[in-house]
Length: 368
Image (cartoon, rainbow, N blue to C red):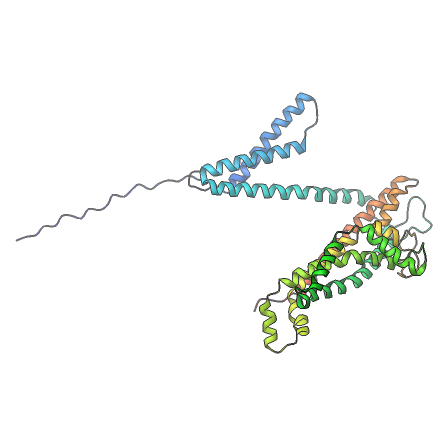
C-alpha cells in the first residue's frame, strides 16, 4: 500500500510595492521648505502686480503675512491628506509657533541693526578716552558716563544681590509656607511691578531727609537701581532653589551635615547657573534706566569716581541729554547719543557672556 502526498503549495508572493515619497504616509523633508518658497513666490507675484497696477511700493509686511498664511493652509491641508489629521495638526502648530518666533525676532533685530548702524558713526578712540568737560560741539567722549554706569551698577549689585539671595534662601529653606514668607512673596510681587520713576523718587526722598533737597550723588542712583533689582533677584533665585531635588538635601542631612552647610555646599552650587542668570537679568533690567538716574545721580560732564560726592554721569542719561539738548552741529550730538546706546548694549552683552562663563565654571559637574 503506497501513500501519496500532495505536493506542498507555496503561497503566492505578491509583487513588491513601490512607494512614492508623497504617498508613503510621510512628507519628504524638503516639502515644508518647498511649500514655504512656493507661498513666498506666489504672494510676491500678487503684491508685485498690485504695486504695478496702483503705481505704489511693494508691501513687505503684507507679503510676509500672506506668505505665512498661505504656507500654513498648504502645509495643513497637504499633510492631512498624505500623513493624516494628527500629523497635519502637528505641522500646523509647528508653523504657527515658528511664525510667532520670527515675529518676535523682528523688533529685536530691527533695534540692534538701527543702533549699530547709527552708533558706529560716533565710535572713535576719543569717545572712549575723554569726557565732555569744556566740550561744545564736536569732539568729546563718554568715558565719564561709562565709568559712572559701571560704578553705580556695581554698587547696586553689591546691595541687591545679597539681600535678594538671602531672602530667597529664607523663603525656600526656612520660611516655606509661613505667614511671614507669604507676606514677603506678596511684597516682592508688588515691588516687581513698580515703575522705575517711583524707585528714583524713593531714593531722592530718602537722601533728601538727611542731606537736604537738591542733593545729587551716585550712591542715590545705586539705591534706586537696587530697589528695582531686589525683586527680580528674589523671584529668580527662589525658583532656582525650588528646582533643587529634596533628595540632595536629605542625603546631606543623613550624613550629619548641618542645614546651613547643606545650603552652602549642596543647594547653592546645584542652582548656581540659574541664580547667575537671574542676577544678570536683574542687572540688564536696571542698567539702561534713565528716569531714576536722572533724578538721583543727575547730569555731569566731568569724571567722578566718588559715589558719595557730587553728580555722576551714566550712559542712559548721557544719551538722553545729548539727544534732547542738541547744539551746533546737531549731528555731533546725535552721533554721541547713538554711540552711547551702542556702548550700553555691548556692556550688557559682555556681562551676559561673563555670567554664562561663571555659571559654566561653578556649576556642578554631572559626569564621572
